[in-house]
Structures are given as C-alpha cells and as structure tokens.
Length: 202
Length: 242
Ligand SMILES: [Fe+2]
Image 1 (cartoon, chains in turn brown, green):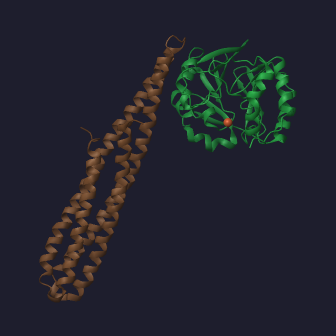
Image 2 (spheres, helix red, strand yellow; image 1 turned 135 degrees about the vertical axis):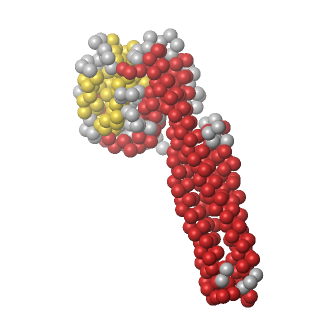
Image 3 (cartoon, chains in turn green, red; image 1 turned 120 degrees about the vertical axis):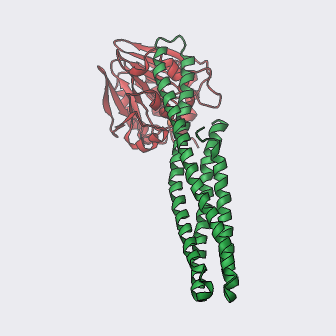
C-alpha cells in the first residue's frame, strides 16, 4: 500500500471518528435545550425572551444530528470506494507487471484488454471518490453553519439570561454549554474538512 | 517461472514452478494448466505473490480470453489467494472449488468469476472434449479437498499429497525415490491428520491408471515411482508430526 492510499484510508476513517464525537455533543445540546426550556417555563415572564431561543436550540441540535447521520452513511460509502480503488489499483499494477514479464510470449498482446479495462476501472474509482468528497465537504459545511448559528444563539441567550433575575445563573450555564458544544462541533468538523480537502475536485 | 510440458496429445498439460524471482519467504508451489484447442484450465492458480509471473507464463500457452476455468483443491492461500486478481483479469471464467469452502474462498475476491461448488463426493468436469475426474481427497490435508485425474493423460494432480520443499533449481521429477522420501516424511506426518482418510484415498487411487503424480509442491513422480509413492504413503503413520 503506498502512502497516498494509506492517507486516503486514514482521512476516511477519521471522518467517522470525528463525527461520532459531533453526535455526542449534538445530543448534549439537545439536552441543554430541554433543560433550558424547563427553567424558562419556571421563570415565566422573567425569561420570556428565552423561550423561543430554547426551541431554536433544540431544532438546531436535531438538524445537526440528522445531518451527521446522513454524513455517516456517506462516509461508509466513501470507505467502500477507497477499498475498491485500492483493489483496482493493485490489480492494474500487477497487470502491468504481467505485461512486462510476458514480453516475447505468444499471447502477450492479449494482456492489453485487461490492462486497459483495469485502468478505466481504477480511474472511475478515483473520479467517483473526488466527486463524493466534494459533496461530503458540502455537507460538512452545512454542519459548520449550524455550529456557527448555535454560537450566535448562545450569545443572545446570555443577554436574555441577564434579565432573568434569580434564574440568571442557570440560564447562563445553559448558554455556556451550548456555546462550548458548538465550539467543539465546529473544531471537529473543521478537522474532517482539512483531512478531506486535498482529495476534492479541483 | 519454469515451464515443463508433461503431456502432449489432443490436449496438453504444462507444469509451472520453481520461480526464480519468488521472494524467499514465500513457499514454492507448482501450478498446472490443461490446454485444449480453445480453452485453458488452471489448476491450483497459486498465491497473490506469484500471480504476475504465473499469468505471464500462461500467456506463452493461451490468450487471456481462453483462460476459462480455474480449479482449487482446497482453501489455502498458496493455492488460491491470487483469485482476486484473476477475477479482475478474466471476464468469462469459472472457479471449480470445494462447496464447503465457498464462503471462505470468496474472501480472496470472486465477483466476475463464477464459483462452481464441487460436492463432497466429487464430480466430472469437461473442458471442451476433455473429461476430468474430480476425486475426493478429504483431510489430505484440508477437511474438504479434491484431486484431479485425467484418464487420457493418466495424470493425477494430487494437491498437497506427495508434496516436498525443494531448492529453486531442483529438477521437476523425482530421480531417486529413496532420497526424496526424506524430504516428504515430516510434511506428511504433520500435515495429514488422518490414517483413515489416507487409507480411503489410497484405495481409490490404486484403481486409477497413473503415469504421473503431480503434487502442488516439490517434484512430480512418474513411472514406477508412482507405485513406490503409494506404497510408502500407505505404510506411513500420519497425524503424528507433533
Ligand atoms: Fe494447504
């Protein structure tokens, strides 16, 4: 296995691991939202501005979870494609070796067909991989967009929390945890994108 | 890869082996082909490492599109781990291999090649007009194992039975049986687990008219050495090599 293939395997595997962390964090946000909703309900008028925010946070978390679930399916396809490309490339290289070793053999020419077929299959895999990576990068971009939105909401929540009297501390804690979670998601997804970006369609 | 024609009639048998470029840590193995007018059967196609020299050698005898059949006596990697590569090279081929091992052998890659499962009691396969008998050789050494007998050429391709490990430049036929015995003893005692299975095989094979015994490793036996081998194997206690 050459280093290009190796790093491709690693890049694809790293998506799955980064994303499973994103999933955990997104679930945390969703929990924080439920928690905030309960507090806001108890706070009544004092946390009036906070209530729609909690719904929004919850929505955002749900969407993130959904997106990541889809991306995981995609990442599995990408992994299969990488395995396939590896197989095709290995066969192509061996076939070239056969042609070299068969110089002078009566039927050496008959090797041309399998070689050109193997080459086409290998190049198809490479093209498909690039196409899929480009698409996956788009989906990852959507997750980052959600994470950025969550951070803006967290900032708004802090302002709203300051009006909430004795509930200030608990609502501020909610805002804090949403912010932290969004930050983690942003970082993880960014790492995935960097790992993949060298394979995108240029 | 050394090529030796071992039968020449209306069809041919060629033995391949003693590959001088083989890595030292890979065991040497013999591959065989049965070549008819328009088809070619590969017996024990070999391991991945041997694929390129083996396929290049076959191209001296048949074009790619006439390599239509493969046979594997059992599931070991030195017998058939090259399958995934043949699978991508051949567009119209069948693999005849033990039914029991289908799910195992498919791990080597078998998408375009058709897996034709051999039932436990063997069968006859036809390559154009050549009829080959697939003879059960279970537990010799694999629990599900077959040999190939060609009644016209009087050749029995006997897989692991009769195998020995030799230097890359060793002759392809046994020359002095008494000397050769020492190269086979430990292997047969260790690899063949059952005296009962050995007995059944010998009884079956003694009824065949054989000019050449062609094993997967080491030298072939011809003429009187065939009977010498059967007698020697008959008297050897196996399953004792530990
Ligand atoms: Fe074996």
